[in-house]
Each structure stands twice: as structure tokens, then as C-alpha cells.
Amino acid sequence: MSEYAVELRGIQKRYGSVTAVESMDMSVNESEFLSFLGPSGCGKTTTLRMIAGLEAPTAGDIYIKGRRMNDVPVHKRNIGIVFQNYALFPHRNVRDNVAFGLRFRGSNKAETAKRVADALQLVQLENMSERYPSELSGGQQQRVALARAIVIKPDLLLLDEPLSALDANLRQDMRVELKQIQKETGITTLFITHDQSEALAMSDRIAVMSRGRVEQLGTPQAIYNQPRSHFCATFIGNANVMQGKVTGGVPGNWSVETDGHAWQSASMDHWSSGDPVAVVIRAEYLRWCDEGPDETRTNRMQAIVRAVDYLGMSARYIVRTTHGQKLELVSPAVGSPLEVGMTKNISVDGQNVILLPADVACL
Ligand SMILES: Nc1ncnc2c1ncn2[C@@H]1O[C@H](COP(=O)(O)OP(=O)(O)OP(=O)(O)O)[C@@H](O)[C@H]1O
Ligand SMILES: [Mg+2]
Image 1 (spheres, rainbow, N blue to C red):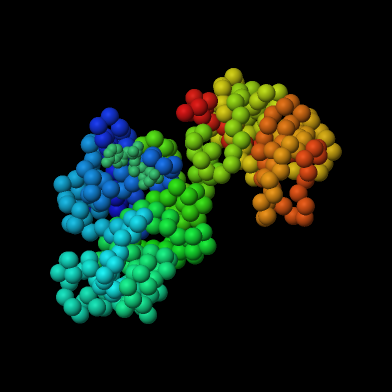
Image 2 (cartoon, rainbow, N blue to C red):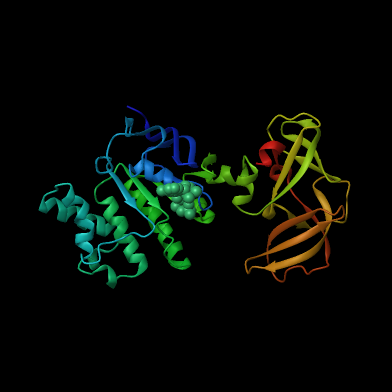
């Protein structure tokens, strides 16, 4: 018996000449909350549909709890699914919507009633079991769809952008609730989103996808702090990416140069002098510093403010360094933000100067 809840081995999906999913290998742990994050068309839904059994892979194998599923039909996979348009039955009330999957599976009356009541309690809709979908808010409908998916006690919960129909505030509330329900039930959950903050807030791990491939699979912290590609660095958060080369050093303390600027990086990777690299610095790790101009210190330089976006809690600046490098900086906006034309020093910790091989970074 496999220790994994889901395993994908060399999964691929072609539609004629379009490759929706390229050879994908991944293992999902029991009770894990794993998000697929990526731009429109990168293959997220296709991946989930193959796991659900709604689409057959062109190549590769799918295992759920160690059992090969390729030839197992969707209704025998014991999977709960919530799609973007969660399609409740409009002429059935909440209780009957939730009970549907159980009746379909031949559950008896008493057991059905008990399990529906439990599921509705879990999503806090126990008082609304008589209502019809049209009498519910968007968030409540979403919870009915969730109750309907979990009432069957699935081995796996597949959620394809389940929060996208909700307005921003409700969406934030629901993501906390959804995460809580997932932790309470311990159901292994695969969650699709193209919203980075949703993925960062909810996931045990994130699979960042681009053009049918998983670019990086890791914890939210790892994805954010150690992006492995240009795409991961720029798709999540705001990052400055500069072309440069390694001028010397050892793992943990490298010197690199970009357009006349010297940077020190705490990268633990192995580099050689002269290696072309992309230097990646997240906008919020660049900060203003008050000490006098000391251009000889690495990772510190003078910059002039070229543009300011005041965002309430923070401000986003476009600055230009004395060597003409354009950088983006996001800093907490306590009091009034700096103004265009002001000159100030900026700095960054070597820990936050990320180095990527130039060829990977150019993908
Ligand atoms: N039935 C189909 N026939 C042909 N091409 C398809 C089919 N389904 C999906 N595709 C193509 O496969 C690619 C991946 O589609 P998919 O729906 O998986 O993307 P996605 O990541 O879910 O995007 P979105 O965020 O917009 O929902 C796209 O280029 C899409 O046009
Ligand atoms: Mg999709």
C-alpha cells in the first residue's frame, strides 16, 4: 500500500496538437492541502479532471491510495468535487442537494439523515436545510456545494476555483472556513486557484504551474523565499529580476554584479566565478535605510524615487539607482510615503538576494 494519497506518474494530456499537461510527476500526502496555482490555460483544470476520472490521460498513471485508477470510472473513485460554478440542483432544497450523492450510493434513510445533518453542521448551515438554492447567498451556496462533496466521506476532495464566484470579503472569510473544515475532516484536498494570496494562505504545499508543467512544488514559504525559476519569482509577489554574473565567493556568501552594482548573496547553491545569473530581489525585501551614503557597502545604494503608488497599508515605489537600474520597492506606509524626486539609500539582506541560473531564469 502506498503512503501517498495521490500519485501522478508521467501524466500527460493532449488535445490534438495542444498539449494541455506535459509529463507531470507528483505525490500528494495523506490529509494534505495542496494548491495548483498558475495563469489561465496552464492546465490546472485538466489535471484535476484527469484525477477525477472525467478525462483520460494521453499517457501516464494515476494512483489514489496506492491503487491505479486509470480504468476506474469517476463514480467509483470516491472523490468529492466542487467546481467553479458549483451547480446546485435548483429544484431541490439544501438537504436534498447534500443527500444526493448518498442516495446515489445506496445509503439508507437513517444513515443519510445523520450524515447530511453532520455535513450541514460542519459548514454551519444546519438551520437552512429547507431552503432552496435561490434563497441562499453566494457564500451559502458555496457551502452547500462543499457539504455535498464531503458528505460521501471522500478519499479526496477536488476543488476547482470554488471561491471565484464570491466577492472579495466573502472570499476571504470562506477561505478561512474551508481551511478549517479541511483540517477538521483531514480529507486530502487538491485546490485550484489563480489567486496567489489564496494559495499562500491556505496550502500545505503549492504546485506552481506554467504551460502544462509544474515549475515548482513546495511549501508557501519555500515558493515565496526560494523561487526556482523566473516564472515562480515573478508570478508570486513582486520581484526585481536583473541579469548579472558571479564574481566570486562560496556557498552562503557570493558576490555578484549587475550593471555596475555589486551584490552579496547568501545563496547556498554552488556557483563559479563568471557564471551568468539572474539576481532576484523581492520588492518588499528592499528597504529604505537612513545611514549616510556609503556606496562601498554591498547591498546598499542610493536611489531616487521615480513613482509612488500609495496602497494604504503599504506604498509601492519605482526607484532608479545611481547606476541607472530601475527597481521596485514595497514598504509599509507609516505616516506619509516618500515623494517623487526624493533621494534615499536602499538596502537588502544577502539572505534575500536570490540567484538563479540565467538559462532557467530566461524560460
Ligand atoms: N476539451 C479541450 N479541447 C481542446 N483543448 C482544451 C480542452 N480543454 C482544455 N484545453 C486546452 O488545454 C489548456 C489547459 O486548459 P485548462 O482548462 O486545464 O486550463 P486552466 O489552467 O484550468 O485555466 P483557467 O485558469 O482559465 O481555468 C488550454 O490551452 C485549453 O485551451
Ligand atoms: Mg480551469
